[in-house]
Image 1: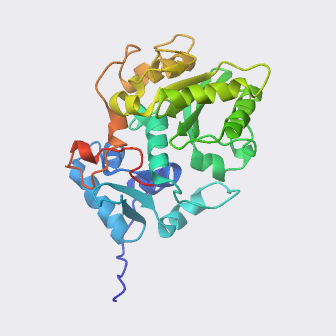
Image 2 (image 1 turned 90 degrees about the vertical axis):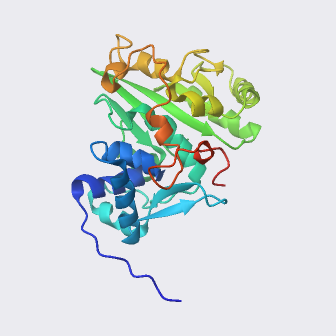
Image 3 (image 1 turned 90 degrees about the horizontal axis):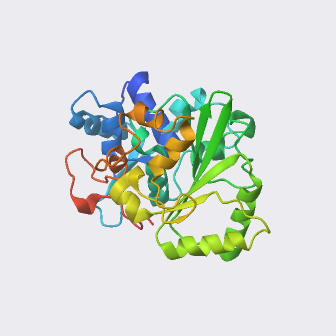
Length: 308
């Protein structure tokens, strides 16, 4: 079998290298997400064309689900070697995704409507960064990773104060003892103001809350649960179905923590108000699994279990 030669490709720092950094941070992404973030001022087909060129040059790769119909993009070793000199010293080098479906959903929830524009006072810390960075390279308010590493944090600063919101995406179930340990961790992590859980059923949310109540004598009421299907349908407009902030949307929760004047920070930064009820926006691009920029068939949207 002939070995396929990698083509030579000149990488532009403002776009190509930025795409490689984006893939490192989030581990996995979609064609439409890249088009929205890096090609918003040009024809979306240019995004797909450039992704193919980056793949042919060996900097990224495309991975399909078991049906061969749904596709995502991942960084390769060659792509990682390009950005490594510009990363801070890492406690552990690495770039891959061990659970593609989980990482895709986590990035969609954490990044969401900030895909194109992110407010200066909100920092998004991905699981990749939490895993690879030294504790000293993260904000002081972030709990030590050796105790527990969630799927990411929203780190929100407001003047001299800071708020930490953790993300836990739970596609597979853990044991009761594991949930007790997680509850104990968050009970002691006083710098964490809120934990957003994304789960598949209300039953699992109830089970997790019950485990938490058994983990310690006093339990901090900081856990809010959103269903995966509600997020697929509504994105940040999905409402909490169990725990704290019942019936509030994820957008409202983020908005309430972002400013002393709720509705004035997150909303104005991305172009919508506190009463966010619009149709699915950027988060949907993060979950669209068509290989090209064209296909928007519903069966090519992300579903739990696409990438086991």
